[in-house]
Image 1: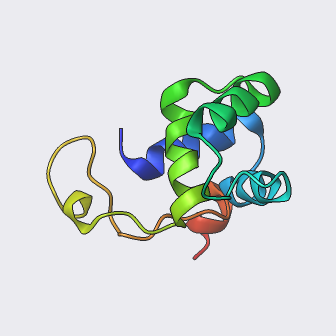
Image 2: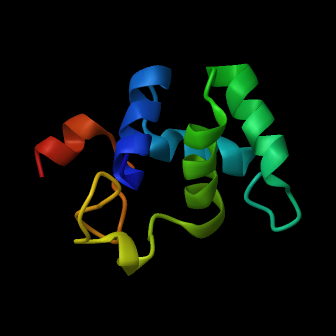
Length: 97
């Protein structure tokens, strides 16, 4: 599953765009450098029923922003992403761009 596919699946499961969830995390202070991933994983599981893999994809965005390593862009296989910048504003908005 590509990084973007993880974010799209999170939107399907929660009904919230990745940007909304990142904003919620920031409101809680989860973007601070000293906040451990386990705290965020627990929040996403308790609040939204997300598993560890999906939570870790969102944690990357919370901690590092929407850019991913270029090594995953244009490569072959199911983990390939089309861009090194993830779309956070929802699948419907991406389809209209």
